[in-house]
Image 1 (cartoon, one colour):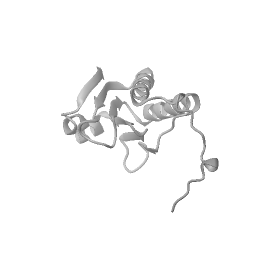
Image 2: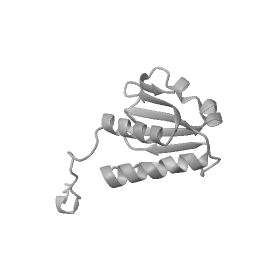
Image 3: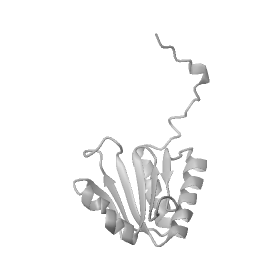
Image 4: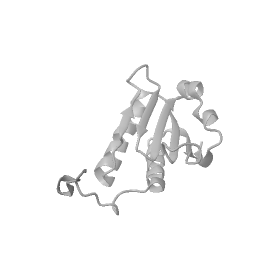
Length: 134
């Protein structure tokens, strides 16, 4: 028989955490503010169980992607108490793609050439486009 000691489990204020929709909107606002371009919010919930939303955007270079990553950290981690489960950024393994996995929301930031190469919009073409900012 398994016993779970709830005394050592940190209490999480569920009211204070963002839901998937709010988190996706907040990520879109942050990356738009940092001038990512061609932003697309896809609802992938009917296609996969790994996430509810994908946020896709294009950046000009690594410096812009790093600024966005840092701003996401500041606004989501510090202000909203939400942090990514995993981050794979442009400096790792060839670059061109920053991926931040927030559980129900996964952010994909690409350089233009990397975005064209991987074509996530084509791969997830059956997903509902919730928002598109050119």
